[in-house]
Image (cartoon, rainbow, N blue to C red; front, top):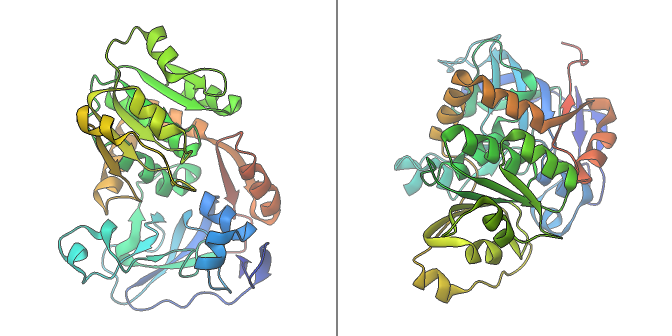
Length: 349
């Protein structure tokens, strides 16, 4: 089969012929139809310090995908050949304290698809049945392929109550854009999104933001004034990882404000902890998706809201044939558009 492979340490990937993955009795074999390009994949391709410390070549990256089930193991019960599926990319141990308590997203032995084991940048991928998510008939393949990052957005957005609240989202990358659409769907009052990319800010306005401001030229406090806000934001969703985003967010929260923090900082962040204490702020780290409550939530929202589906359709700005993966990676690196999806449907069945 064709696959994008990190064959050795160093920058680059190679589209090569490799053996099909071998499935066990509890596994599902999936023909990949679409794959999303994630920041993790960009790190692996460029071979930055994180990748060199984490990845053991040879490896097939990729963890955002949609595909069709082509085979199931003898122990598989609920997934059937022909189903359109995505996958939860965190494969957990099932026996640690958190797994046994139903907190599988906190498993300390997690193996990451496309990071610690071969992933979905290939014609076929194998996953345990417990990690396979079956979609309803007729789902758009591009949307199905981005259920992993959509899950990040939903997990972050739903951490705190949103109905009638004023919400600040820092970072208008694909996950920030998805979060804005979800927050609008759930029923927030004012939504402000920040970034430094004008194309992404335009997308933020299209998916539901009341204001999308360029923090290179405007401050969040100015946005509050423009909206007639009196006491600050109730909820902050930090999606950027930029070292300036969290401090400015804290400065613009109301007393008792709450922050869900998904963006991974590249270095230390200076926080006014006295203000966190005296304003009784809550800061919660978010990683991945809750397994599988987040998946249930996003599936339900998409099945019942054409408006949300339409907003999320806008987030996928590029679909590129898998053989042109280098163009796809280059587009994803520009940080000017939304989600980039690779199309594998020209592969032989």
